[in-house]
Image (cartoon, rainbow, N blue to C red):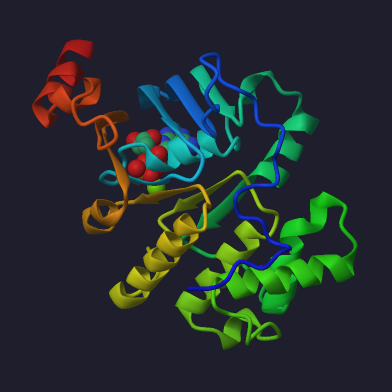
Length: 271
Ligand code: ADP
Ligand code: MG
């Protein structure tokens, strides 16, 4: 496994974490009774009364079929969109109550994103793609590059810092994107179908990387439609039709007793 370089602190640089009301450490992410309705004729209820939280250092898989609301949930958790009802808190901060500027700062400094399509700048080296993850942190370029090199080390790419994305394989590109997500030492990393564009073996290797990062203390939420992938993770949450139907952290909780039949029945009674 890769050694953690001193300049990259995967446990998060935020030492002003808010205590929770019960005196313990507050979860990194708290989703409370979140509903999301997309306007239209008819409106789409993409999420219905979703609640869960993620503690610091957890590796969580969210699994569900296409259309079950995974990407919608990721956008709300990642502060890219706001819920129609309910609340999302990141490191204790209520996303809906933050002014736009503070929200942008929160997103830039506390959250790392990894997407299926990598979203790398093709004309820039791996190093500069990763260093760009620090553009909003007000860090001089020399320091940005030094930190980027450390982050490339975390994903096993320290030997190819000057390669451009088109000189790298799909798996290597995704590693660059993961390094970019990590470089600012965010409190939490969200990955939406990170293995969706990769063959199975490469996808497994990327998942192994998330497991290594988890051992180092990084907090990661991985969204996937692949049940095998989710089942390998320490904690997995299953979604169906905009709701959580199972959470392995609460196997006997509210969601555990809900079956696909219950959801179908809800659907029928809601109309
Ligand atoms: P998943 O990522 O699990 O495939 P999504 O969150 O993308 O699910 O979609 C959940 C539901 O919300 C689907 O019915 C989808 O068609 C709908 N949806 C997603 N985004 C929008 C949008 N921008 N406008 C209207 N409906 C949307
Ligand atoms: Mg999706």
